[in-house]
Image (cartoon, rainbow, N blue to C red; front, side):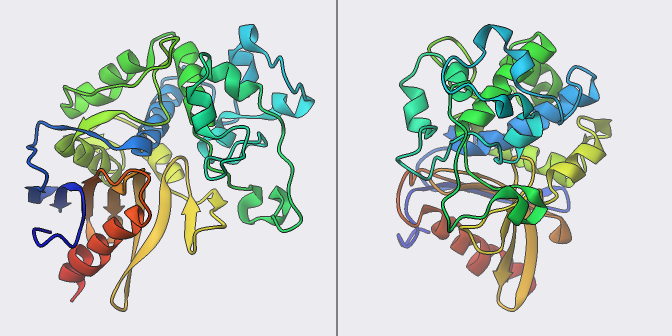
Length: 320
């Protein structure tokens, strides 16, 4: 790290068997620094959806999206198939909306959303997507879903949570998730209309990111208290869709699923991931959580760099 091989790494924290065993900061910061881990926020949205369902405030993952927004029904590109889009479709990045952040030409690319005032209207007005001849349709894909990374859909889940819980997302999150974990300080991003961005940009201290990973490693419990149901944790971290453009990668409910190689050993993990190479990786078989924060935003090789730290150094030290 100090030799400069790894660029713009902010912090590395490791918890093993429920104990903090390594903590270091490499950018002149300290434990109080808030980290913009970008799309790692999406996994927090999964946790909040699970809590809302367990509290009976949201009927379940089969709940259709449109009824939550009777005042924002699609004005553009009306299509009866939109009425069938569910919470689960947005949790799994597999709705039929034409929304793909990896495609600069996509109508639903998140950069197009940010210049709009109404982010929910932006999402609901998107057209239904088509499939090029070389693309797998949902019925041809594993799990019957076709993956397309869509921040707009997860952002709209924030609006669903606002209306289902009748509470602004930041307030609901603080009361039901952050405060029980001892997380006192976070920084939300907001739309022009005051919608909390549940698709990215939520700032956390590194130790608090570690708590979120540990919560899911613990099956949703923290210090003897139940924060989110064990059933939801299990369902969230099971594969629901195959990520076709990333080898050996699947997606749960806003959690990435992959096995990392350390020499000849394979280490299965589920993890939060965000632009810049940010990761909160949970390794159930090793009883370990790793936090890697980085500011290599929109830089080629950003995720490969933090994966190299994981595989060649952290995991290798445990599996030799």
